[in-house]
Every structure is written in structure tokens, then in C-alpha cells.
Length: 154
Image (spheres, rainbow, N blue to C red):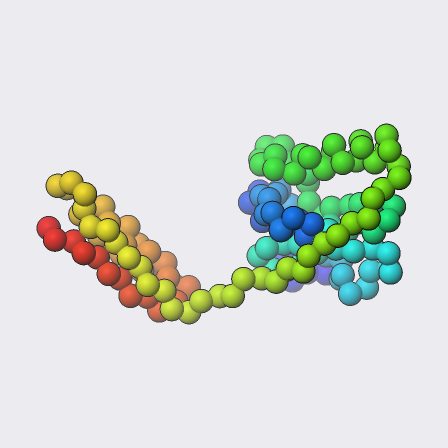
């Protein structure tokens, strides 16, 4: 059981076969502990936010499952290709071996350098002043130390 679960329409999921990231729709409060998978099962998908398992696949049989909504209707349709895989597995039940790559959650940074390009025409300088200050405010709220460099000559 997960503390909060994965809920919402913009959950990033990484395909461990390709390392490609998809945006998915999810609403679940449980996750498979991949350390407990039987011998011939391997992780297929992992949540890029928290590293929880989002799918498993059999290493030699045409069986797989995902934890999110692949159709994602009213949201992203990034993973509707899974339905084609399913139909292909029914038509040709002899599966080929699956190869996956390890994935780890990216490192969180505590220091960030925010660079501005300065205004390109008269009147644009204020745009970066506003967006740069909003970026610094958001980074401060996230506990990230930031330095802003803005070559604004105006």
C-alpha cells in the first residue's frame, strides 16, 4: 500500500525496454514490490516521480500488465500502443524474450543557476524580470538555492 497513491492525469512512466517516458492517467493506491516478482517476471514500467512499479512483463511468454490506464481517455494517449501489443500477443502467442534496462530516479539538485538572455527588443526586459522572479520564488519554496543572472541592459 502506498502512502498517497498515484492519482491524476499527468503521471510520468518510464518504459524499461526503451527508457522512453510516457504521460499516463492513474488512480491507484497500491504498487507491486518488484523485489517479490516470480523468477520469470520482470518490471516493464516504473513511475518517474517515485520509482514505484507501474507494469510487469513475463520474460518469455506473451503476458504483461500495467498499473495505469493505457487508454487515458480524457487525457493523454501516449500508451495506447499497449493495446496493439495485446492484440499482437493474441494473434502470435509465441513471445520473444524481453530485455529491460535499470532505471533510477534522477538526482534532486539543491542549487540552481537561472540564466536570462536579456530583452531582444524594447519592452521585453520586463518579461524575464517577472518570469525570473517567479522561478526564484518557486525554487525557494522547493528548498532550492538559486542564483539569477540577467544581462538586462535596460
